[in-house]
Amino acid sequence: MYRRKMTGLLAVGLACSLLAGCGGKKTALDPDRPVKVTVWDYYTGAQMESFHELVTEFNRTRGKELGIVVDDSSEGGISDLETNVMAAINKEAGARDVPNMFAVYSDTAYKVYQMGELVDLSEYLTEEERAEYVDSYIEEGAFDKEGEMMLFPVAKATEIFFLNKTDWDKFSRATGADMEKLKTIEGVAEIAEAYYEWTDSLTDEPEDGKAFFGRDSLGNYMLSGAWQLGGDILTRDPSGKVTVHFDEEIIRKLWDYYYVPYVKGYFASAGRFRSDDVKTGSIVSFVGSSAGATFFPKEVILENDESYPIETVVMEAPQFADNEKCAIQQGAGIAVTKGSEAEIEASVEFLKWFTDTQQNLRFAVASGYLPVKKEANDMEEIRKTGSLSSQVDSVMQVAVDTMNSYRLISVLPFARSAEVRNLLEDSMQEKAETDRAAVEAEIAAGKSREEAAAQYDTDENFRSWYEEMTAALAVYAQ
Image 1 (cartoon, rainbow, N blue to C red):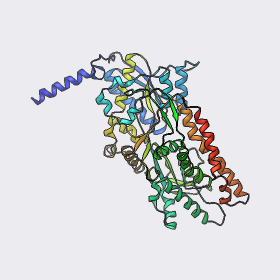
Image 2 (image 1 turned 90 degrees about the horizontal axis):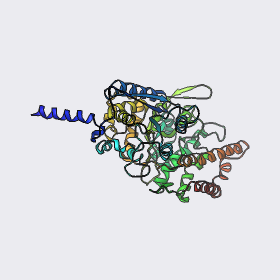
Image 3 (image 1 turned 120 degrees about the vertical axis):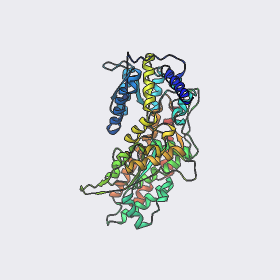
Image 4 (image 1 turned 30 degrees about the vertical axis):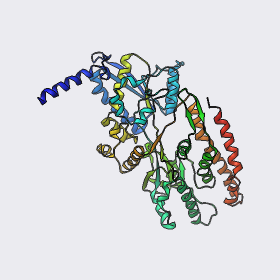
């Protein structure tokens, strides 16, 4: 009886494999006449190697069974990829054919969506299949109406706090600084001031204290910080209308806990990424993407080429005290472009296979990203891969805890959302850098740090920047 029941189930499974999504629609795939589909990505290093290995494995196994051949191409950085995709869609001279799939962030995907080039993947997955993925990852692909799936989630990340424990321990032993304070944004600012003063006291040279902290993305700070403080800088209603909420009280607090400590020398940014600044000893901590786990340096290299090894501590990103905990949900998805039914079906079959728990875990562990299915967002499952370094293990543990317990934030895209994101990313950062340089020049000319910084830490200075930003953002309201 049991054997007959199992035979029946196998027969149903075989029948379903001949139908698209078991939905009663005949498949357009034919193992005897394989269809070739292309996927463009922006992966580099270990991510690129892992992705290519999995594409090769798919072609040799599941792809061969169904009649699918996937051809993957790394297009360089994300901006290069987006440029190449838009050139292909616009049929520019010298551009290649539009890929069947491409990795993309939601703002660029929305542009392509408005051009009518993307496939709504919701009809290619059953409700049961969709329910296997983290809800917010699926919801990110609903651009204009509930239930849409214009982006297939493949790998995600969030922000976490990285700390050079070796230098922290020296500071903590000397001053009694408590690591618990690093859990809040207010505490980080307080510790950063104390660190500057302590490092300044170590030499006879006045005002040569060192910065403690940096951020890889000020845009993420602006968006998630506003959420924590009860605001939402950007909203878009179902009709597509975009509203900017640049609440002065909320923005002032964001200013006070980034611009002010930056101008005073407590925060800093010098290299392309803050992990670069840790490596040179410019800072000892930063908030950055969990996907950067493999890039945190193992040593500090000083200007005189002396170096020393460092240990790392990884923590949840600091939050504003006594507010709801929020975390940025980031990481590109993969969009599928319009084509023949066989090409679309082949693309979806590959993406389903790639995001299945075992394959997706292998990619996640190799790349530092998080898997996208609910059952895979569990450290026991992740550790079963057996290939985690201690540092990546720590990062993924913190990232998984964050994704499973915090309110996840992703901004609904709109026609010019990338431009708004760039404005939030750059405006305060550029002002902080410019004004810090001016403070340093005045200190070099003989002013005290307090005197030099005081003229920038004013209501008038904030108000001038705030009004300029408010006017710049108003342009994007629709």
